[in-house]
Length: 122
Image (cartoon, rainbow, N blue to C red; front, side):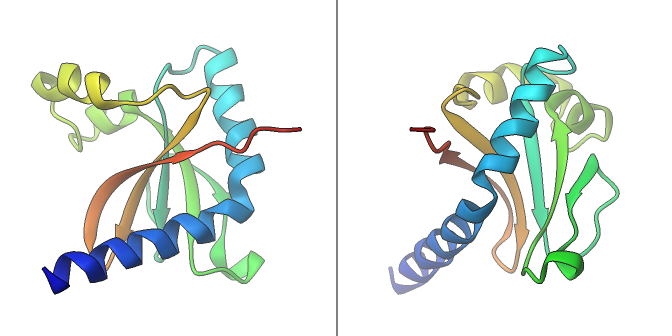
């Protein structure tokens, strides 16, 4: 139980750290959607360089804990991070990209998907 609490706290910390990039990630998501590159944008969040997607934020250049790359479900399938037979399951759990950002977070908790609300411009 205590381990689950620590994991939830760490995920909240990650989610809060991502808030500073919400506008940039939202714009990137919109660009991916508009260009028909993918209907399923995924942002890879990691502390180490990852050879997946296009680098948007280099943690060393912006003095952050995280580097962020823009990717997609299609790239995840071609790299066998999501197996072809699991695509329907993934699509059914994927949240509306106009309302949420899909993060694939590589941390000391392992690798996991995290959906965070997009900030509404007001």
